[in-house]
Length: 317
Length: 296
Image (cartoon, rainbow over all chains, first blue to last red; front, side, top):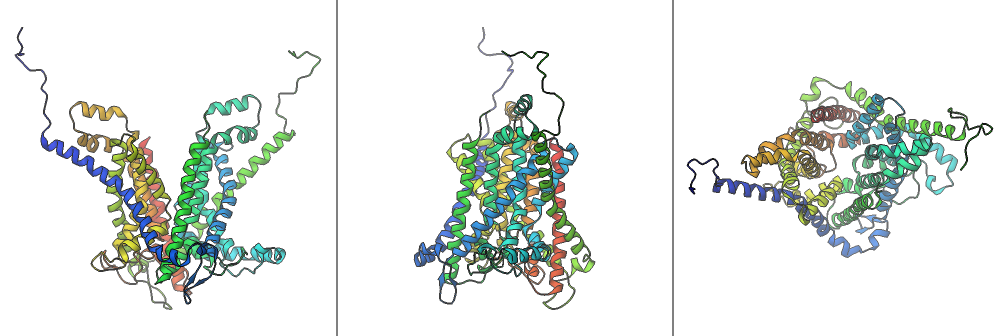
């Protein structure tokens, strides 16, 4: 028995050094590119935090609760903007959630032919693609003049109520809330639709099998099964609404004076940044960056909560 | 155990529309249909207004002339159209290599360790950072420090701000697209002796081309319409673009600036720019939709 075969059937090719180098180099390149995400994220936080230091030292936590915004005396408080950010996004969410989830149900159930459902789905996706600055332009010239008679009526009928206590004069919190609704509807609808589509068909069959009507099945079986993803989508939409800038800036009126009225001009953190950051100097820049830091922390918390909700609430079926 | 006898009449199995629950069912169906109409309505209204108001202003001059000085008539948005292309191009040139590279790492190299998790969570957080904060960040990091030849506001800075916005989308679609490629393909390539690098570049990446391209087209379309990151990075310019290291006009910032001006001519140009921008973005979305059909 010979130890050496006369003819080699297989040869083991040694990997040349160049190939190893390219292979390893490419791996490290992708690691470096992936870490750009972390680097950019940290850089964003540090830039904003660093810039805000001066204002944090000068105003402390009082910044969150006072509403004076006076470049002349150098006194700054972001209460008006924080209040505006929270109120506008939460009100928009309250209007958009029933509309969005209702639409998602309408286009996932077989109420109308598939073709029409797809058309509505595509239209919702296209609505998401329209730039916010175009929506802002439309809000200024079309929506707000159209709404004004209704808002004036609201004021004259319910003027004793603090939320409607001022005469509408054009830009204000109410039109800003409505344009925010338009902006977050596509997110809520799209995510809810995906969530409802993923509910196993067996759950539906079971519900109908024991005699439930369509909407009994939706409310008691299908929605609970999809609730984690829907709530997650709603939280994402809340984060988007809080950070939304252009359309809101163009229609909210950018007033630094605090008012309870939804019909009066208001402000949000992002609108304040868009309006003042370019022209500010000295402590005003720092105060604006302090406000930006608050906005970042708010959206960060909401987004983390969204991920947590999706993990915690998801039903095992 | 109860057994139905002939004397006990069973409830009818026929559909009875006058039952409370069937009436409620109908009501809810109508309500949800109404909601759908309300959701679709803004898209139709915005599209109709933009197409009508902007469409009637479309002329040759619109694409070849500069915006007029405040108070004057006529003019066009030629510089802003070029500017939008320049800034978006800069953003794409940065975000696509970085994003695709990062996506390749997540899908092909990472084994679910802490670093990959950190990048995935970081990516989701970066996607949620408000666009105005991206603008503030690039202002602080690039505009205020004047890193580009002592220039403060530059088209390049605007492009970088948009790239930060695009990055999460590109990484996510690359990661998800690559993971949809059947493992057998890359195993086969490794089996016949290809190196990991060759496998990824020649086999895995081309197989995932459609989903990745779709994601990139959508990211570019979104970036082209963004305004907030550009207001204090690329700024605005009433002149023709002078390279990427000078301030540049873009359509989105032009719409913002001209919408709040009290001059008729400027407002009209804002509508015309909206028309051009919306048509471009909807075309990109339809392109993405068309690309997606190849995936199935």
